[in-house]
Image (cartoon, rainbow over all chains, first blue to last red; front, side):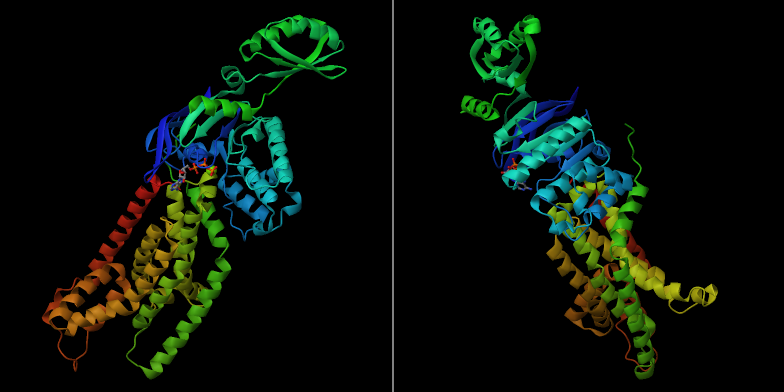
Length: 303
Length: 267
Ligand SMILES: Nc1ncnc2c1ncn2[C@@H]1O[C@H](COP(=O)(O)OP(=O)(O)OP(=O)(O)O)[C@@H](O)[C@H]1O
Ligand SMILES: [Mg+2]
């Protein structure tokens, strides 16, 4: 079932069209990357999902309901704002406690999100004194209050140094695994969400370029998917695979690991072939192709 | 999911208590200082200007309240402007609840100041005595006065206009302290153009500063003998009671408009 649906949504700010006839869908239980350059309309889309603003034309649905009319939807959503909008003179745990109270929750919920986001050492700090990385952790912590079903995270890695960026991405990955929550994450740095996302919406200057599951998009834009095969006999497996017409390249990574590049059209056929190899293959996994390549192909197809 | 049309009284309570708990101490300190000042003024005025009533002193005090009420109103304006409001809305506060909380919190400071002397005497003096006291009958009119001011502040604050809010605050204070008494005196004794301006001014201030209007109106309406006779047109000024009802209605109207508009606004 879809959690988010946009039907020909236009959003104007005065004369600026932040979104133009945008239509896309996001299925449940996905981690969606909302990708596009600065000014593409990512924040605008997220505010529409949160019900903070109202579409000028078209329809936005979240779980089948219009969020700007149905304020009760927000109890099922968690939101990380693009800019830190927290009261800077407040203490970390006080702010979390106040926000939890609004949701009808208590101290134990605050403890849970502090633990999940590793804010323990900073619980009594003034928000204004936090580093950017920890400010972002606080943002993620508050978004987790009340165990929302969908997290809407607006550029969680923006303005962070590479180390802090890594940490935040790792944190999001862990959270996705542990909490099994759906996420929509926006970024203007295209490849960075590669490891976490399984669905993507590409947007530029208010126009949706394309969207879909990454698997479908690899295939559609002929970005070669890459598989890692673990086997005790790489030589034999390689020999069998190399005959297949849809296998483009094979590389030996280690004595027991092969990297296989395949034709995007034949994703399923390849999986079947691998399973036919039976005992020979210990394990195989899909390693995503490059989101950057995909983005390049999508934008090239457009212009 | 159940659709709830009910205003979350609980959320309003939670959010106002969060907002108020941050400034309750400051409120009480200001309240005590102001009340001390008031007592001093009353004692002092009884000695030097025997005719100055407690009602007239309160006109000054109301002007001061109007400035103090800006304190929370500007916080709200900044919350709206900076987007901090998204944080509270994201955590299930509804737009309507945000507006109602704003009104309550803006109104609260003058209420605390107004009621602390009574609360302080409660338990010391017999309650009946307080209720029959000289100042308690001013309370309903003062409430009407706070409410029109608070609802106008709420309107401006919910648009995130913090600078405009301060300008309006100063104007509201001046209306109470200066413009109302001036307008009414112009109606009482003015000629030609000043009479017309005074009359218009009185009508406006009767709604926007109902307390000051009532005090000034009654002052002139009940002048004792040796004073110069008033312009006949003075008697056509609407009565303060009617005007305070109209003022209250205006407050409600402003508030409803604020809510309707705020519900459609991008935050
Ligand atoms: N409140 C607003 N008033 C006027 N214009 C706005 C407003 N919000 C967004 N815009 C404009 O709408 C367009 C899309 O903005 P949006 O913030 O959605 O982009 P974005 O993809 O989030 O960009 P970024 O990566 O810079 O955050 C931009 O041209 C922006 O200037
Ligand atoms: Mg943005």
